[in-house]
Length: 179
Image (cartoon, rainbow, N blue to C red):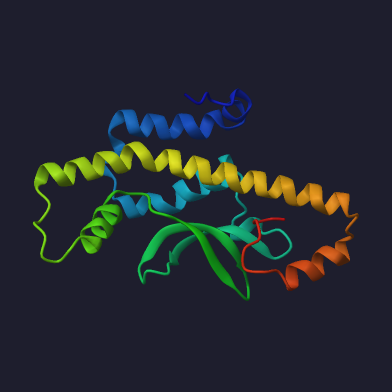
């Protein structure tokens, strides 16, 4: 079982405490989900996990966007990816609720198959609630490792700021955010 990084928690204890209090008090149950998206994305993904938002863009690029269209034709509450004034490429959609997950499962099931029972729907929502945080955490760790590797490669090759600017302007589709 993974353990909590105490230094990360220490730096963001106040933000975590506020969200935990809202959860414990039932305030999150009463709030409209969409009214929480911006604050949650910014606070958790931006401040705690360190993704650059539009307001904290680095070299005109940012990694976290809200309300992004995804390849399937739908939209996500947010997304981790590569964003700038001239382009937007979603790498990992962020859906903050289980409704979109259940809808996607229903969409992918055979049309002639039996409808999901209430127990089946509950099981899907429970699965989402149990597994989604782990997936988000793993994706965040992967992106962090990609940034670390890219920085080491840049240093090993002695790339200058001009070199990096040229590379970013001509980068292939899959490059780690913030490299």
